[in-house]
Length: 274
Image: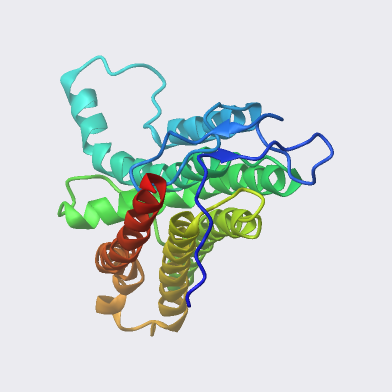
C-alpha cells in the first residue's frame, strides 16, 4: 500500500527568534496568496534588504542610459540618442532577468538569514560591475543587428581584446546566474522548515535548473571565445550567438517543467478538497 501524504496546510509554523533561519516575522504566514506558477508566497512584505537590492539594480539601469552633458536640444542630438535605444533595451532586459530571479526568490521563500544577505550583497556587487561589459557587448551586438544604424561603444584594437570582452561578459553573466542558483538551492535545503509541498519543491528545482542553463550558456560562450582561431574573422560572431541558444533551451525547459508541476498542483487541489 502506498503511504498517503498528510494534508497540506496553507500556513507555516511559527519561527521563533532563536531559529537558525530568519524569516520575515515570528508569526504564522497566511499562504493563500500564490504566484503564477502556483507557489505559495511566504515573503509578502518588502524588507530593507530587498529595498537595497532594488535600488542597486535601479542604479545599474541608470548606468546603461546614454549620458549627456546636457539634455538634447536639437533633433540631431535626439536622433543620436534614439539610435542608442536598442542597446539600452537589450541591456535592460538582461538586468531585469536577474532582478526578477531575486524578486521571485524573496516572494516565494521569505528567507533573510546570513547566507541570503551575503548572496544578495554579492549579487549587487556583481551587477554593478557587470553593467560595464554588458553595455559594451550590447552596443556592439545592436550595431551588427541594425547594419550599423545603432552606434557601437565597443572599440577593438586587437584580437586579444575581442576574446577578453566576451570572457569578462560571460563570467559576469555566469556569476549572476550562479548566485540566483545558490539562493534557490539554499532555500531548497530548508524545504521542511519552510513547509514546501511537492509542487513547490518541483518548482524550486525547476528554478535551479533554469539558472544552470543560463550558467552553462555563458560558459559555452567563454569556451568559444577562447578557442576561436585568430585568422577566421567570420567566426567572431559565435561567442555572442551562443546566447541565442537560450531562446530554444529556456522555453523547452519551461514547457517540460510545467507539465510535471501541473500534476503536482492538481494533487494539491485534490488534497485540499478532502
